[in-house]
Image (tube, rainbow, N blue to C red; front, top):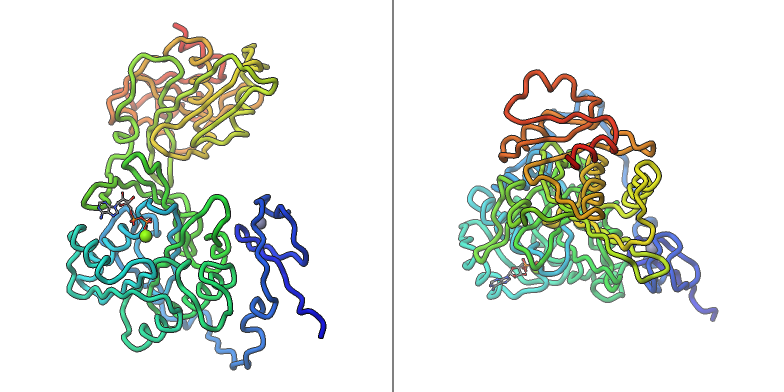
Length: 452
Ligand SMILES: Nc1ncnc2c1ncn2[C@@H]1O[C@H](COP(=O)(O)OP(=O)(O)O)[C@@H](O)[C@H]1O
Ligand SMILES: [Mg+2]
Ligand SMILES: [Zn+2]
């Protein structure tokens, strides 16, 4: 009998290969391919066809998008205005970041008005109830269960009809239809698909927790991302207390919004004033530090950016960033070299956005470039200064969006000066008066402002 052909699937990105390779050609992950039988992969293709049902677009009732409040306004905002009925929401994050804590708290809130089922494949009912007690979760209509079987969960949901379900975590759930271990690609994909169909057919929202593993040891959320409706990532530095919840995919809202939380003994709390939190503990009067203003979704957030430059002992000097795009840093150092005549090629450079915030907005350029300038020259930037603006390759400062909101946030937090691009700030000047505005058109001009 000929040997059954197998395929190899990347645990990180889900790409398929006919042969094993050490490195995934699609996402670049090492040793991430998992051998799988192709029968397990081609799931429902051979199932008997059901008649297609359809409706006139004008005749679908308007109330088809019902949203629940989770009782956590930060989460509701990230979801695009509440939890949509019938949606499948993935919450990904490192182990220990607080996924179970957040979801149990949400269940506690929702369980006051709705019946909610929280299924854990990781903890016993006793452990769950201990955790619930610690978090002060005591909703009458919250049911907890410890279970690993995909089929049992689906059956329970069909029979008991809870109004919301949490499954924690997908890596611990197995479907008996698939002959593969828990957490493998095919299991994760099959179970996610099954829960998606369940959410749609029962018209209930389902949260699925998924662990992220940077070394590709377990099948991660990347594989699930294109199946589910909404993907939220829970991020943050585990050593620090704050956490950021970010939407990376949302069929029912914008993906720009973030929610900010702090983790205490009695659970996660919403942070209404993220700027204050990001700036707490800031050192005064040191070089290489300034404050940027980023806009996340609709909300401006101030954060400290730090840069350190030191003489390199390597032939290839180091460039390291945390919270900021490395390629963007390359670009900014090139502009500082070429346009401002700053020699940086022999320096190791480190850039850090303090507080675990990840900024991918070009508006952060000016603050990062200024922090670099300050780090190299050793001259501190006045501590009551906030800056934002995109830096172009010509060293020019480009206009950014939401100028008014950014300036207002700086003013609200008691800063005295804002340095911003001239372009796009004309309308502001006349009306804003509580804060000094310095509008400049090039990075060189901005740096000049810092030298005085
Ligand atoms: N029994 C406990 N007492 C105090 N803190 C706890 C307890 N259990 C968990 N925590 C804290 O809550 C954090 C988040 O845990 P958890 O919600 O289980 O994370 P996740 O589900 O993302 O793996 C942990 O890192 C830990 O600091
Ligand atoms: Mg957990
Ligand atoms: Zn891959």
